[in-house]
Image (cartoon, rainbow, N blue to C red; front, side, top):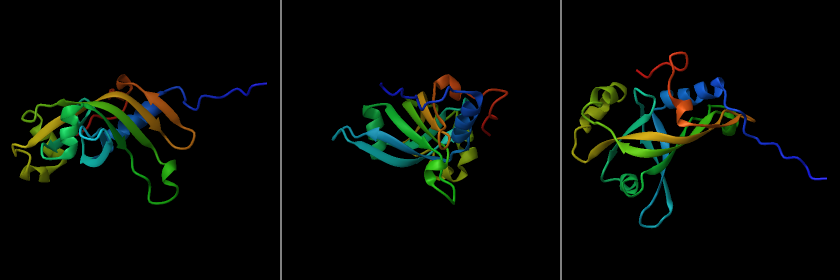
Length: 168
């Protein structure tokens, strides 16, 4: 008799949505994964992120960086949000993998918003080689801790009046 396998992915509920939105809203950096256009191999780097007013992460990138060249060649990317706690197994702490598409954002219109999160970025924000990108979600995978795995849609990540508070 064949064993019945159980899907480890739980049905997405409001608690999972709120946790995922909170991981994005509270993040000040994330691991960014892109594909190197020269080699076809993955590149992972750390980037600064700011939650956009709509909950979509924003990042300021230099055209001099490898990851920006990779995003110009292929807008598909992945981000990892969430930090392990100071104690215990790092795999028991919540984390969110976001599959996204990098889009140009209005650097001038969002300057005060970005600098409100990173005031020291004033030193380089207006440099000509820096671009502001919006990392629009395509899909997300939340691991809320042991046995708490969820698939989320872009709609699941949108802030709600009853859900996570809007970013500052």
